[in-house]
Every structure is written in C-alpha cells, then in structure tokens.
Length: 119
Image (cartoon, rainbow, N blue to C red; front, side, top):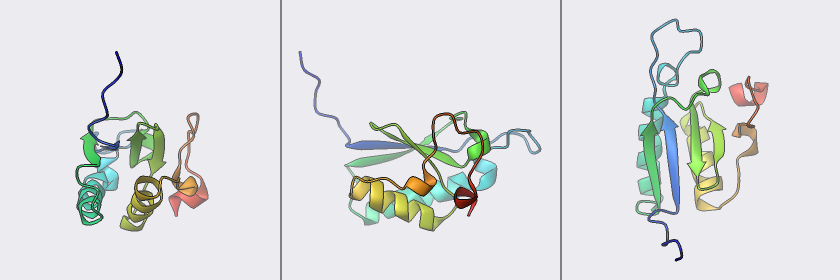
C-alpha cells in the first residue's frame, strides 16, 4: 500500500504556550507569538497559500528560551521569529519558494539565540 497524497503541502506549528509570569524558561505567548501567528495566518491567505499550507497553534514546543518558535513540516525546520518582517520572510522564502531563512533557523542542539536572531 502507498501513502496517500498529503492533505496540505506543509503544516506550520506556532507555539502559543503561556507560562506563568516570571517563569525561568519564559514562554512564546509572553513574547507575542499569538499576535504573530494571527499575522502569519492572514498573510498566508493573502499569498494564496490557503488550502496548501496550514498554520496551526501549538502548545509548548519545548524550546521556550528560543521563542517565539515555530516548526514547518514535513521538513521539520525550526525557526525563531520576532516580527511581522520575520514572518513575511519565512512565508516567502520557505513556504512560497521552498528555500530557507538561515538567519532565523534553529539548530537541533541550539540553547541560546544568536545576535542576528535577536535582531
């Protein structure tokens, strides 16, 4: 038996987890992830990605210190993002053109953000 064709070309899971204020790991929601996720959903529709790409909320993705974070499947590419401009770049380069936004990508073993990622 062969696998069926995927329903979506890509799934984007945006962490919107909120931890209590002052938590040592922080949280993506406290860093504005919900507003940025909403922006990403609206921009994806404007770019005609509706039906091709699904933008989802996710609970904790366990990379709180690097947040806000998102992960794109099926590739499993992780990004940090801070602004609508970061979202626009991820949508254009990764989800429209199939490339990567290297400056925002997170390595599997990464524990802190680079100065370029912080902005």
